[in-house]
Length: 193
Image (cartoon, rainbow, N blue to C red):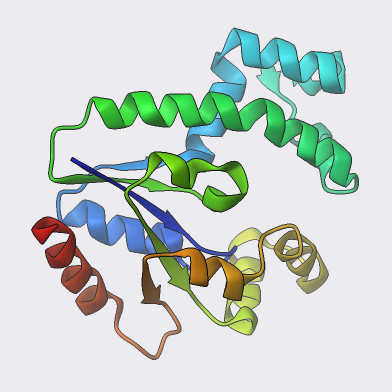
């Protein structure tokens, strides 16, 4: 079974693309959802987060997301620390999930595939590309945040041009090219590998 990654910058449309692969019967592991789940369920991970960010990191046993976000999005060292704690646990969880799949290929969707080193566990990586102005607009609408907040998040990710060069395949999600034919063509290619 092939292990495929899907990545792209914030607002690029990774989730939309992975939903299309799911319609084609391909199982998808969402790394962001898994990380959120693991930060609430994995006791060792919870303890590491508390040691780094204090007891206030959890309220009634659940991650205090606002408290953590307020810290990590204003302090690059704290963001690096959080990623250093969470990424290894998520990488292990993804590898375990992949080992249980029984299909021609399975997908791991993650914004930070290259930043986390996850590409080492994957056979191919698909990049979802959208121009920056469109990504900003989509994220502002989706998350109800300011343009400045979106740009700040974008600045914490690998430059989009560099990220796309690192990918094996590119799907363009610019509202000019149709997504479904691109996904079907790539699906057929992956089935033939």
